Image 1 (spheres, rainbow, N blue to C red):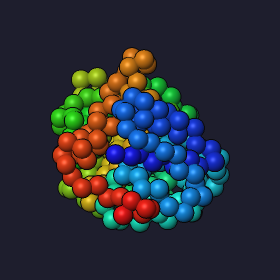
Image 2 (cartoon, helix red, strand yellow; image 1 turned 180 degrees about the vertical axis):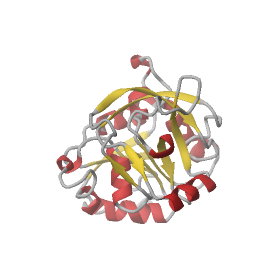
Image 3 (cartoon, rainbow, N blue to C red; image 1 turned 90 degrees about the vertical axis):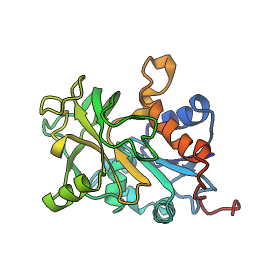
Length: 243
């Protein structure tokens, strides 16, 4: 299978995602420049963290208009797997692929540290190598990760099991103290209704290489790979010569 990592002007976690996909997880991987008109036949698209276009106007607000995003939206609408990490999550929200908004952290300070995440739904292509209730130890690095949405949307997210990760304590307890940015209901990651688009503020690619002594992030990449390779599911190919 093949990962495609989109590179926007200002992306700074693209090489981390590429390294984990290709060298740690031993899969094909390719960078996709933001001006690309196609996705070069990738099976999975990763929108990495960073500061796309300098985060001017609003995080992700300019990146959503990049030429490559037209293809990412089409790919997602056909059922293709899309993972947005940090700035990638913000871009997915701005592009309308996920509901809600990401506000300034409640502290008004940039937060960069390891946090604990409780897996709320292990029955997805992104978390099938986890169990519901598992606690992952993964870093965050953002100034605008405070997830918010209206009450009706929150109820729909909860009812459809679309909340995938919540900030929690080491023991898995969801508390205000464990919430690093003031996110509504401690939300750290959500999925779309179809289950093929995940956005999350924590960085799994920064906790996936054994050399860094933190590997909980591998479980997301392993889940995606298992979804395609072990589950023998038919991937949705990005439009290219592979059809």
